Length: 443
Image (tube, rainbow, N blue to C red; front, side, top):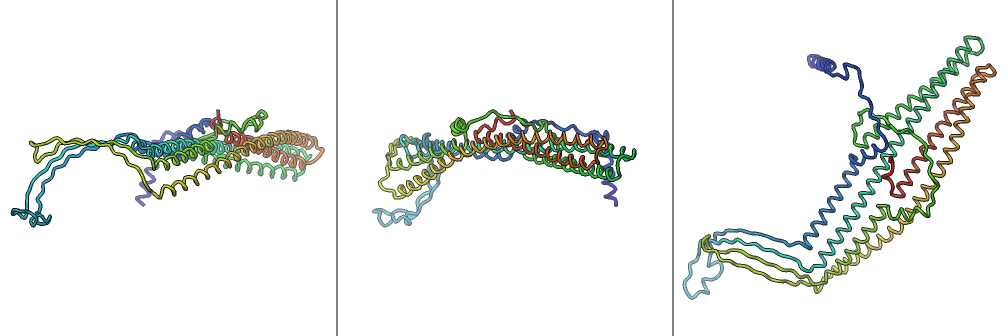
């Protein structure tokens, strides 16, 4: 009981000291545009962040291979030793002409030296480094592809929010119309020109429209939660969409003029091309394993029994290494050749896939544009039908069954229009993805 009492007191004090709670004011929601949503996703989405670490890892690997292939390796060493040796254990006592002690020492030795090694000609390591550079290029292109996917996903979530917001507007307009018709039916009933069934029918329609509005509002809030989560924002932050759902027609486009540009811009296609070049460099590195390797080694240091008796010592030598027989070279060559054929198959298939993506996106845009035109016409006709039914009911020509039917027809027409506009917008996103022009979304 004491613990519960303390909690109640703390909550009461918090409510008194919090300016937002005490004043009853809520922070105004942030109006998020599509462009800002895309930028937020690029800066904070976890998929983009993880993909960039893979690019950094590939760059580190390339730097390491470059160091092995081109840069000198310098080492320094300082050591001091104190030894006591057993002559008998080395078998020297029986070979000596004079008597030797069984144990010699202790004696000390000091050595300070530096050594450097530099590859002059090492085609195998050089080709391995060039292959790693191609891999880095492919990794960067894969990163660009991941960026495009994140932009598309953010735009799709934003589009879902726009669709639900449009449904709220449509549902709110139907609630307004139902409220007006309910009042009209009630007034006519009070005047004796309408039945109680007309009032009840209008009341049921109003309740249904209110429920549809509540469902649309909840779906809109859920879409904002999903969008905020994907953008790396706090899901509890107040948010609303600044860009409404709107139909934007596109000029007529021909796939023959778009496919070549898509091949030059698609990061997945360019990444495969870089991967192929990396495999070619690996082939060259495999052949270079039989080439001679020439290196230079040099060392310099001071050696002595004590610190006062150091003597300078050094060495410089050139070395040529070459492989006479190494059976695994042929196995590695077969592996690389198979890898090259696999990449060629993937490139050919992706080329056909890119053309399919472009043609499919254009078909979807054309179909969606036609659907928008038909849905807009249907919505206008349904709105006109509702107005005529209202006039007939108000003049007493008929009951409100026609009005309720017309309201249902208008609701379907509004939903058809929202779906058509959403499909058209989604198709434009698909065309942007096919043409690797995703970054233009929201511009």
